[in-house]
Structures are given as C-alpha cells and as structure tokens.
Image 1: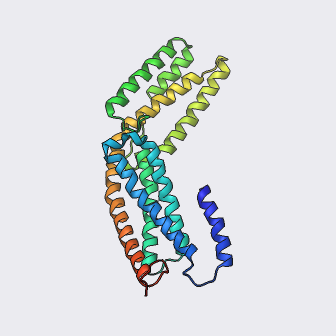
Image 2: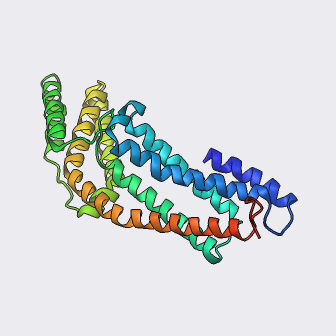
Image 3: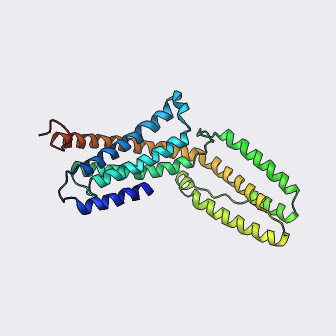
Length: 264
C-alpha cells in the first residue's frame, strides 16, 4: 500500500504537468515496469514452488509475499499507464488484470486456511491430530491445577456445539467464527478471573489453540478443494491477461511507441 501511495503521488505530479496526449516515455515505462512485475509474479513463485533444487532460495512464505507484492504493485503501475481508462485491447488487458488481482486476494484467503509449517510446507491431517493431542494433554494438566469452576469452563468448551457449514462458508467465514469464539471465551475467562482472583491467560490461550486446531482439521480438505477450483479460474485468467498484454505491447511497439528502432 505504501508503494502504491508513493506511485500515486508521482503520478499526480506527472498528470498535472504532462500534456494531455499520451505517448510520454514516463507513461510507457510505467507500463513496462508494471508488466515486468506481473511477469515475475507468475514466473518466480511458480518456479520456487515446483523446482526442488531452488529450496536454497528461501522459504515459500517469503516467495509468496514477493508474489503478492509484485502481483499488486505491477497491475497498479499498469493501471496508471492506462490513465485509468478501459478502452480497446489495453482496456481489456487492464480489466483482466483487475480480475486476476481480485482473484489473487481470494486465493490468498483460501491459502491461509491451509495450515503450514515454518518452512512453508503444508501440514497434513496427521500433523494436526498430533498437535491437537499435545494441546489436549496440556489442557488436562492445567485442569488438574485449577478450581472446579475453571474445570467446568474447560469441559463446557470441549462440549460446545460446532456449527455445521459447507466448504465455502467454512473457509470464508472462519475469521468471523474465530472472532466470535474469542470474544465469548474472553468474556467467560474475565468473569472467572474476578471470582477466582487468579490469572487464567494460559487457560484461555490453550483453549483458543485447541479450537483453532479443530477448525483447521475441519477446514483442511475444504480449503484444498476450494483452492483447486480457484486455480481452474485463476490460471486461465492469467494466461488471457498476458496474451492480451503481449498483443498490446507488440502493437504499440510496431505502430510507433518511440521505443523501437523500426517503428512506422
């Protein structure tokens, strides 16, 4: 966002001082650099994800962050290059870029529903089950050291009713469900702390951890299915975007952008 705001300031100064007719090198270079950013968005992250010998290049989380950065800043630069107009082939390319970026935000949300290790590898159901068992053991140890009221809270939390949701709502509404759970649990813990006169932050943290693991187990396969469906739409849109962009660039150079030695 900071980079986009910075470019916006530069663009405003340029727009106030440049002639109304297009063709200024500054506008062309905005499009060129933005297109290179968009190409890097598609190429480098995919290579890092699929080529094993590139593991030395850093964790997947870092490359995903770079993928998102260039996938936002690049189209924004191309949007400035088009003077925020959607006409002709350039307008089609820009419209596709907007759709691809919007799709990318959705895909990112699906991706974050799949738990990952610190190295960026996807966690398996067995990994989550093992972590859930460790968390449950920790909670059981905590319960033995607490009062009957605290144990009742822990047991009630374990027996709470789980909402039945489909794949889409299970993944898309997870932040809302998590917020509701944390608010309700926090209120219960604060009320207990007043009567028990003891801090229960560790109990609250472990119950939240148990609930998050339960949600991850339930949402794991749903998120993977949604991510697979998302790829079916996102990848073809990206190919269409770059196909139209290459035609636009080739036609611009051929018909006299001032950046090609043999323009007419």
